[in-house]
Structures are given as C-alpha cells and as structure tokens.
Length: 302
Image (cartoon, rainbow, N blue to C red; front, side, top):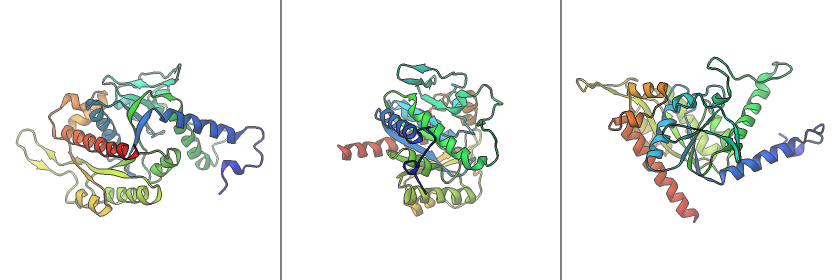
C-alpha cells in the first residue's frame, strides 16, 4: 500500500503538506499532555464511556489535570455525560477552546459541533456511493483535528473514549505513537469477554500498546434494603481469570448502581453523588493504579 509520500501528483492540493502540517500541530499540542490513555472494549454496550467519565473524575479528585476526548465520532456521548452539551466551541489565542465541566474536566467531542440532539454526523460529498471506503478516512482526519486543534492546556491525563470495533485502538495508536496505554472494559457475559479479549490481544501484539488493566463493569447488583447480591450476567467465566490469561492487571468489579446512569443522564459527577459507594471506590482504586503505573514510566524516562 502506498503512503501519502508516494503520490506522484495531487492536482495542486498539497495533500502531503496538509497531512504533515496537521501531524506537526498534533505533536506540538501533546507536548503539554503528560499521558494519553485510551479506554477501549471492542464491544459496544459495556459502559465504556461511563467508565471513561468516572475514571476521569477520580483522577481529577486526586489532584490531576484531566481532559476527555470523545473519539466516537458517530455515537458521541461524553458531552452529555459531563454536562457540557450546550457548549459552543470557539477559537481562542491557542486554538479551539474545549468545554469545561462543573468539576473541571476539559472536554472535546464531535457532539459539540452538532446543531441539535436529533442531528446525525453526515459528510458532504458529490455522491454517497462507495462511502464505506472514504468515511473511515474522513473520521480519522476529524479525530486528528479534534486533538491537534483543541487548546487542552497543561494536562496530566488525556483520556480517549474509543468507539466500538476491534480496530479503534490500532487506528489511535497510528495517530498517537505516544499513547501511554489502554484500559479495557468488559461485562461478565461470555460474549463480551470473547470480543474484548480479542481487542486486548490486538492492542498488545499488533498495536504495541500496553494494556494498563481490565475492569468488569455492571457487576452484581446489591439491594440497598436487604443486602442481597444478584449477578446480571449469570455464571460467566470470571473476568479476573480472563485478565490473568491475557497477562494484564485486573482493576476490579464495578457493581451495578442505577445512580451511575442517572448521573450520566444529568451530566453530574457520580463520585460527588455517591462518594462512599462500592462503584466510586473501584473508580478511585483504578485511578490510583493508573497514576502509579505511569508515574513509574516517568521515572524510568528520566
């Protein structure tokens, strides 16, 4: 396959120069970001965006400067979940200003550029025929722009909420060779573990990205009245065992808590609503372990 540099003539559009300029802007922007961490699953419906937002809040509460990039161009939800859906991006002295949540998270999402909740993402073209070929390239270009043109400022962590699909992390790794690592999210069902397991293998063996840990979302629900615990996904294989098989740390099990979804719908931090909950403690422990692991990386680099 040919690269941009192999193009003999581009009709004067200077494709090579445009791409190189955008890549240069991206790398310059990320010099002020200490660690970029992807949150992945490969499987839709496991609560990956929920984990991203609450992990970001936990890191923020520990004193870190945190940003969240919604990389799901077509299914963006981070703006709603962080309460910044009404923010209108505009240019500032250093680039496009990102939204800032009530707790202080810096947020950028394609959702902020859409005029209404019912508006889908659509790309202009003379014809939509063969769109399956060019749409992924357009979306990767948009993702590159969202990172490179956003005035993130100085960040300790930039969390990237990836879309479903096994190739999502590999694409991001091509875009950001400086990627510090990835967090895997699954639920307890065997189907989810099968698909997420493949994504972990792809991350480690193909994309060359360290998987910082695996977390099980939507674990057993504990009744607040009687204390009875009931699993939502039956007797599926243990996610702890799955993490062991793949050679990645197990971050724990996030119990099912209806308040998490309620907070996401309202755009308010779950950790502030239920700081003593079992779920909040898992998010805090994840933040501790990720920060410690990447601090070790910083020390080795020095």
